[in-house]
Figure 1 (tube, one colour):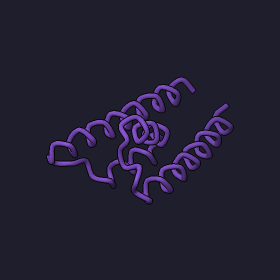
Figure 2: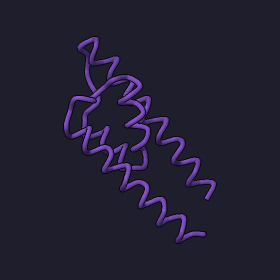
Figure 3: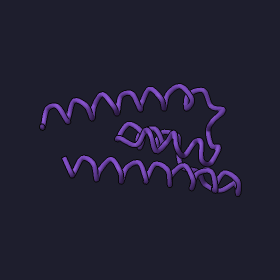
Length: 89
């Protein structure tokens, strides 16, 4: 259980950082982090971090696939974590 908590904290911090780095790069017209990578990070358990990064950095908030897709990913994260907690109690 401790490993799962540590993993979720780490992946969500990484997701927030990815959103911040991508926003920083977008302002400077530099190489960007792909949307695919952002979604993969969300599916890997960092959905809340992606949402927090979207709000904190005001990044990708006008993209429909992010405003609809990321909340669906968070629901998927919640269902998956709930299953794992029940399975390995």
